[in-house]
Image (cartoon, rainbow, N blue to C red):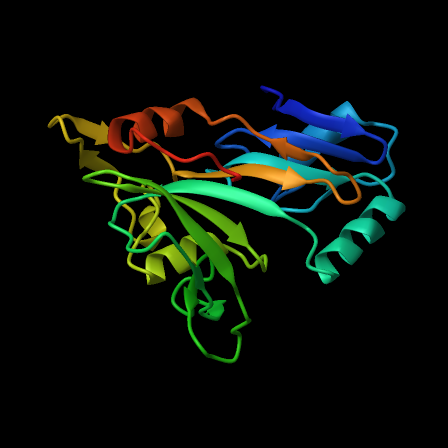
Length: 233
């Protein structure tokens, strides 16, 4: 059986930041299943905890910060409570997005027709959700957006983007296209959800840890949105 690996972006004291590849679960669904948690355990076997502060969907790539001790878990919780836990995502959507920046604040609830999905709604299971977005670049067929999830709901960015009429490319569950035509006329396949966790700030430290753009997203971005602003800004 192939053992999962991930690049180490930051490793100090009670923190480690890993660069999650597409296709790897953040946490295992069943005993013995490999995941990014397993990678962290192999890299830091003497730690007492391997607590991921974000749980990226399997097809989503990028930074995941792990708290490796009781102190780190408490520090991260305090940072979240104070609104100081900062993360930056970026993605490609198959729509024209008006404006330079904005906020999506629709509440998110379970989808009664599919327990693996979420939707925007005001039902009994709904919770507050807030996503800030910025337009990083635009082409004829797609727009590059940067996202800052203020809350951390399941599928939050994906659900909010779909509600806004700007589903992420490749996100079939929420209306995203699996293929599209480039401005030059070639057909482009979209292999996965085009969402990348770009950067995270480790609580109590000044530096921001950044993940390089994955090759599949970078290739589509070059073809569809040739000019894109830096992110984080």
